[in-house]
Image 1 (cartoon, rainbow, N blue to C red):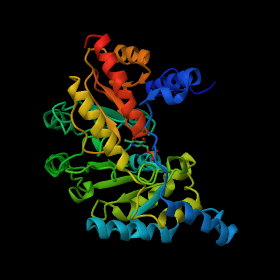
Image 2: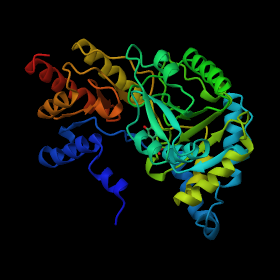
Image 3: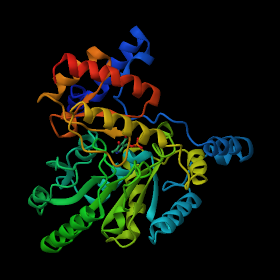
Length: 395
Ligand code: PLP
């Protein structure tokens, strides 16, 4: 008999994909340039030239047997060391390569971190709105995901609900800052308060509560916003990073786990990730990508288009009457839908070739997400479609 668990997941396909498939089908009819496709969070800018040049150089000049050979199961030691040194220099941490594990993107990093610090049946708290894939990340690890309701004022943390839900069963808290889908960036005040609560509860329950911090948007932070380094605030923390968005290489699948050197059993966790890999068939990302990225740790793609698009869309949407918390980072914007049913709203938007994603899968009904990673020229053209939509539908 085939697995019921995975078979059941087939009927629960992502709503984001469904809207994205509409955009592609509509593009085939009227030309994709005429579809204002805000559905997917795919970077819209090229990787830095240095990344491409390094790849070419590696292919031309590095011993090909070594280059295409297996990487060590925790990642290439010299790459792990470079990452540790880079993080120490930038954030004043004390990582060594023993705290770094190379993963396939942030998804791979989270899969490993969760398995290292939870047992089947433990509860993992996450905060709405959240990246919809968290359901699969957490539940397929054997832990149980519990959603702390949103603080819709500013999409920081709903502390009242957090404290109430942080019961003895919780062994990990998974956060994402800068946040997909809200674009909110947790402030120092938020992180400090969260850390204080988790420290007090760990003491009360007599067990560790780990903070897993999902940080693929760390480099996409806009003027006037500060993005504090989460691991500075709480010892039992694990940072899950990805180069997907900072270097525009999501298809290359590279990220890492950085285990806080001050956490309980810090010396084991990266090593344990290697054992998790054996079970889930991870076996480390390609050597060439690790080596190329190691030369690009202190650079990013030109990410300025995301801030430009945020400014244009935020200004227009708010002047059209949409309620919206101004994103401090990422390439998402998360306005409130002008009708209760965000799915119905996004369905109507399709008539104007606006592809918006309803918020239901992000754990906060009544909002919609726009992935603003499109050409600015197209974002500007989409404003007219928004005006017509709002006018015709009498919002
Ligand atoms: N976490 C969040 C919040 C994301 O938005 C994404 C991807 O969009 C991921 C994790 C997965 O990142 P990666 O593709 O690098 O595995």
